Length: 420
Image 1 (tube, one colour):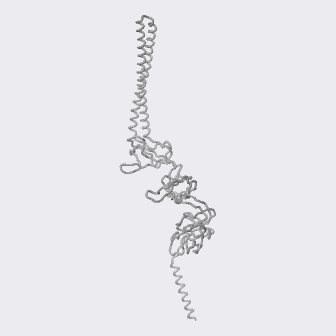
Image 2 (spheres, rainbow, N blue to C red; image 1 turned 45 degrees about the vertical axis):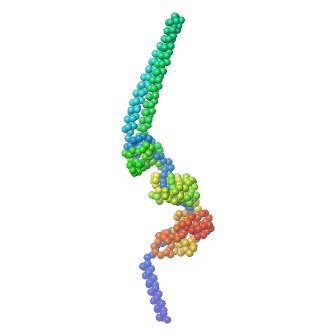
C-alpha cells in the first residue's frame, strides 16, 4: 500500500513540475478587448468622393490671336472679385489703340470742317436765292425779255441751292461715317487692350489649368501663348464647399436629398465635418471608363468646412440612414460563428451566445445576450498564437451579406444568426 502511495505522490510531483515549468516558459498571449456600448446606434452608408467648390468660374484667354502671358497670380492664392489674375503682353494692342485714336481724331476734324462748310454754303446759297427771288419780283412786270431773264436767274439759283447743299450734306454724312468707323475701331482696340489684363469675376482660389504644350499637357505658366478661348485658370469659390461622391447602384435607393452626412478628409481622418445630401444623380453611369460597376453621383453640401477644405482633396462620407436610441452594440470583429451559433467571447474567454440585429460598417446591434458595459474579446481566444482583431474572422464579422432591414437580423427576417 505504501508502495502505491509513494508512486502516486511521485507522479503528482513530476506532473506538477512539468506543467509548472511549461507555464513559466510558455509566453502568455494578451487578448485585445473592447467594451460593449449602449446608446445611440447610427446606421450609415459609406461613400467616397472629392472636395469641390459649389460655384467655380473658368477664366479663358480672350478671343485675340498671338497673346503671350506675362504674369499670373500665384497658384493657390486667394483673390477677391476684381483683383487682377492674368496679364498678357499688350504691346501690339497699345500700338493699335494709339493708331486708331489718331485716325479718329483726324476724322473728327474733317467732320467738323464739313459741317462748317455746310453752314457757310447754306447761308450763302440762301442769300443768293433770296436775291434772285427779289430780282424776279421786281422785273416780272417789265419788258418780257427782262422778265424772262429774271425768271431764269431765279430757277438757276434754286437749282444751284439744292445741288450744292445736297453735295455738302453728302460730304458731311461721309465724314460722319468715317468717324463712326474710327470710333468702332477705337472701341475694339480699347476692348482688346483691356482684355490683356483679366480680373477675377468672383472671389476664390487660383487653380492653374493644363494646356497643350508642343505634344504634351502641362499647367499654364508665364510665357505661354494660349489659343483664343482656351481655359487658363479655374477659380473655385471656397465659401461654399461640397463633396462630389458616388454610391453603387445597389445602395442608390437608400440615398435621398436631405439626409445628414458625416464627412472626413482622407488627409485628416481624425476630424469630422457635417453635411447634407443636396443632389443625387437620376441616371447611373460607369464608375470608370473600363469598369463594369455602375454608380450614382451624390453631392454633399458641407455646413462647417474650414480652411483645410481644398478642391480635389479626397473625402469619405457616412450618409446617415437611421439613428437608433438606447441600443446595445459591439464591434463587428468581436462576433464569431461557432457550431451554428453566433457568439462573443467575454473577458474571461468564455463563449457567450448573442442575437444580432442591424449593423453599420463598424458595429452591429445586439438584440439579446448583452446588456452593455461588458468587456468582450476582439479575437477568438480558442485559436492559439498571437492575433490581431479580425484574425480568423468568421462569417458575421466579415460583413459579407447585405445590411439587415429594420425588424430583421442580417441573416434574414426574424431574430436569428447574422449572415454578415
